[in-house]
Image (cartoon, rainbow, N blue to C red):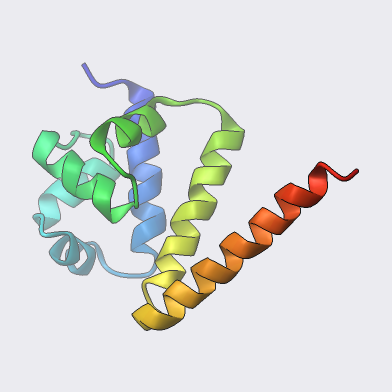
Amino acid sequence: MVSPLSRKQLSRLLRQKRGMRSQRAFAAELGISYTCLQKWENMVSFPNTENLLKLSRVFGFDDLDSFITYLNQTDATNREEEQLVIDILSKLRHLPPTTAVRVLERALGLLKTAANNEGDV
């Protein structure tokens, strides 16, 4: 059985990812029917395993279990962190691949420096 929280989380994610695009256009990008997307956004139904796997990739999760765990979590901090990751990945997808790699390498370098400096305090 799918929890109401999972339906709500999925609906929120889909609406955020869709942005200003129409449901029809976004559904076509996802490779699903417009009616499926509409039902998921309105929390009328929930995706099957195949579509959940597809959505997990769209939202940048490494595997289906991570995505399902995210959909079931209630911790606001984790949701905010995940949303930041989704936003970052969404922006990176619009960059040329070499630029995206450079941005990620630079970000990783800055994070490593910050982590190393925490021990110096």
